[in-house]
Length: 409
Image 1 (cartoon, rainbow, N blue to C red):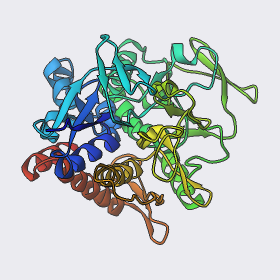
Image 2: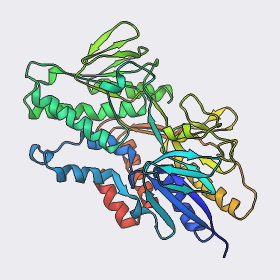
Image 3: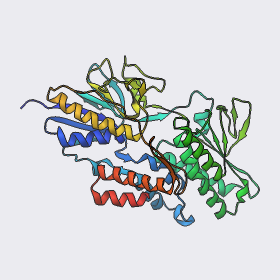
Image 4: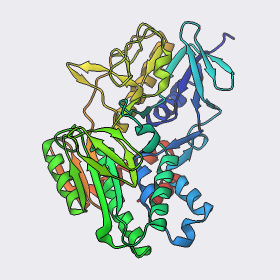
């Protein structure tokens, strides 16, 4: 029997999981499929803000079991999702890629060869070379980051005097920053109440370099989001990026300076550092691998990039975006393409479709913009809940999906 060709997927995020599940259905008898992930968990990233801002009783908040329950809200073991008899799961960190030799090298020194390689390792934080930003700012790219922010906020209120101003700055007014500070506002006020801290001594500031928050969305969304955040007591600074970070204050390009106790950076993302390992490949300004209309990383015919690692322009001048919706679309497309390649059949181009925008902004207020239809408030929250349930049912059995969904609502 001839040796099966090997398909290796690096990354268990939205794109990698969708690809693995679809390959599991269609090609496991024809090819050896491996999914490599450095943690072995699939994280539902839209809920990061929840574990950073979900109120707990003081007693429970100090119990490790309480935090473990919170982690399980968003972290799903990958071997609960895929059938490891059909798609092998390898837990480890890939640090080097030898594209010419068709070989991956792990942090441990272990090596794995491949026939086809799919890079779906997601994104990393982009600091834009701002002095000391990496040193002093919190980021929100993982469950551990969310826990770190939560702990920092709790410790801040424990040590702050009643007359002390509590100053929190979120840098970046895109979807992530706006969503996070909207959830942070009621959380810090609850912390203030528990610790007897005057709510008037709380300062929440959102700093955005662009002319409006949610700048990639429609002006209608920006106006709605700005109004909502101001209702929550958030001060918004526009068109004035941070240019320097010191231990207790930030300096803006306009010459202003703002003190902070906690600084959270959500203003920049770039492709996973693994993108730099593909020698000779073209990249965009975010270090994303520029792919063709088959999602191939040229000049290599056997290497693909999907999700946050990829940038493609497949319809006119419309480029791909770093969203979960598009990552899932690309995973589905590539599973179909690899199946056709295995059977030596013609493939078809990938077409970018504009993602729908659904952004929660605290409590049960959600903004939804489908282009032809848009709304905000509790109706948007209901839609967001249904979207989460639908996604979970596509990767888990119904009973498990429903249980996790109920934990996240």
